[in-house]
Length: 203
Image (tube, rainbow, N blue to C red; front, side, top):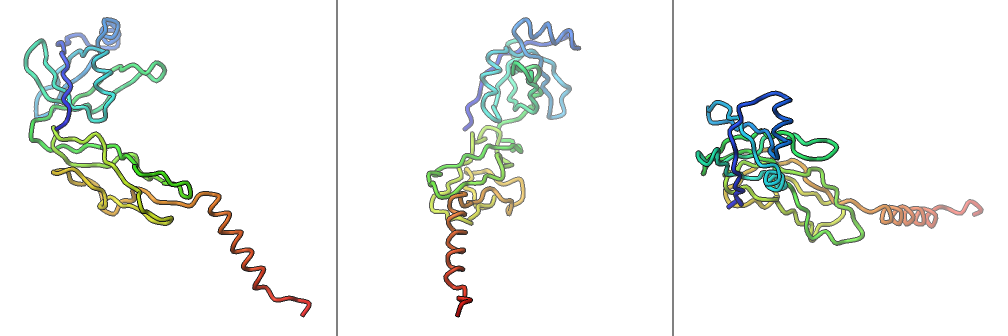
């Protein structure tokens, strides 16, 4: 089960850029909570706790508003300051226990310890449909035993129980490529072989 982060929010009644600046100066982040046919709920989240919670991809949040009405939510969009990297605003979508959601989950390459090849990762994430409370932190992709020229596609990934691919099954995930040194040695070998097979013009 996903690690649920608890956040205590306050109702927000002021809007606009000026109000948002005042909210941030007070140590909070302006946010909007919506979904499941409800009207948008404008709230303020504690800046430090929110920053820590959102360091994890697809962080599942349990938000209490003014000490009541706990809602499970996932971050939909996080606006960060491009210079100082603090969170300026968060859009959150309400989810229910047992509900399946579509999320982008990070791909984590493992067993990549060979020096004669390069692992070319075509995607950093994979789209999954999974229960909101069972979103994995990442999907491991082992390259153990793969040879140069081998590839892995989406349907070959090992997914946690209950999770299904939300994209194309034949989508390329990664490929194993030769290093420059290996390519150079192979080309040099071909040139040597060609020289040995070339006829002697003097004959």
